[in-house]
Image (cartoon, rainbow, N blue to C red; front, top):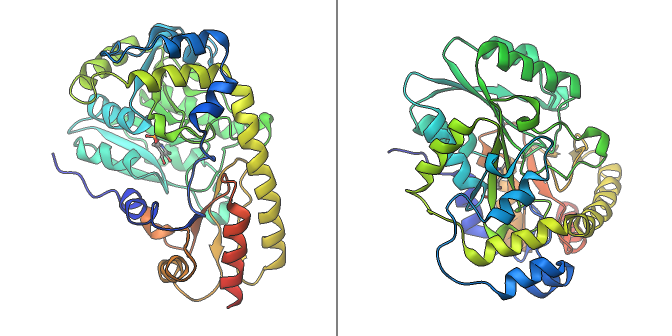
Amino acid sequence: MRIAEFKLERYFARWEFEAKLLLGSSDADSFGLEELLTLADDDSRQLWHDMRFGYTESPGHPVLRATIAGLYDGISADEVLVFAGAEEAIFTFANVALGAGDHAVVMWPAYQSLHETARAAGADVSLLRLRYQKAWALDPDELSSLVKPTTACVVFNIPHNPTGAIPERGAFDAAVALCERAGARLFVDEVYRYGELDIKHRLPAACEASPTAVSLGGLAKPFGLAGLRIGWIATKDRTLLTRMAAFKDYLTICSSAPSELLAIAALRARDRVLARNRAIALSNLSLLDDLFARRPKDLEWVRPPSWPIGFPRLLRPEPIEEFSARLVERTGVMIAPETIFDHRGNHFRIGFGRRDMPVALGRFEAFLDA
Ligand SMILES: Cc1ncc(COP(=O)(O)O)c(C=O)c1O
């Protein structure tokens, strides 16, 4: 199998643990073990204390699957499959659902694996562009122009990385209907779900919207639990789930026992977990609002309707790649330049989920002044 280098992950491998301050990360501030266990209910804490380090059930711990199923309307535990992070699920899905002769449409700019794994699986990929000039809106007519008889899959990411965008409900419904008419399976990467600033903007999960559609979930982003490496697939299409479970036997086989149990605790305490992270992000967002108001000649953005990421534009003539390199080398602050998404327009991803963001932002602005 040939697969192109994952530019974003290579960039993070270079800087994530070297830069002093991360202003380009897409996750919420992480939890420590004690902090998470303090939020856990008695049952979850008991499961944690009784843990054994044997293999776990390959589709996922039954309690975890049931807890995940409870996040959706009309989904049962049997319609959930647990993975070692959302990334493993993306790779598995592409290899099971796509092959030579298939066509896929993938929302773009994108977390690269959403289109790269499809290409590596042999599919012909068309990119459905979200445009800054259109406030990163989903255009169902443009989707319609890309769909053809061989389109096996349409891949969205909602809320969207790197822009934080969420489609209008009407556009989403039109896209779902279009996929059903075309016989194309809709796969929605929903790892930023629960980051909607206003609950009114939360769309139905894909697995609720259509019987063949697939929802991808995970604990890395608004939950702030990336190191647990827990992601999942939810779909009413049991045939697809069976095939994905069989493919996973060649990857991690089963998830990590401690991670599954901590994931149960976190999901059961999700209101408090998310409230803690949302409060940090909202306070950071108001600092960003002030920054954009103060510096209209340097920066502009479409204010994201979700936390914790957005995709501003640097209005100076310096290419963003060079600006980002000078920024991290001189100040220790890392942003994520658009080049890691192959995007052109002098944008960068900013992450506002971390507690130390005000310090990072202060250094960022001082760098602009210098
Ligand atoms: C859109 C999107 N999907 C999936 C992932 C991978 O998530 P995980 O860390 O759970 O593998 C990321 C991580 O950045 C992401 O941004």
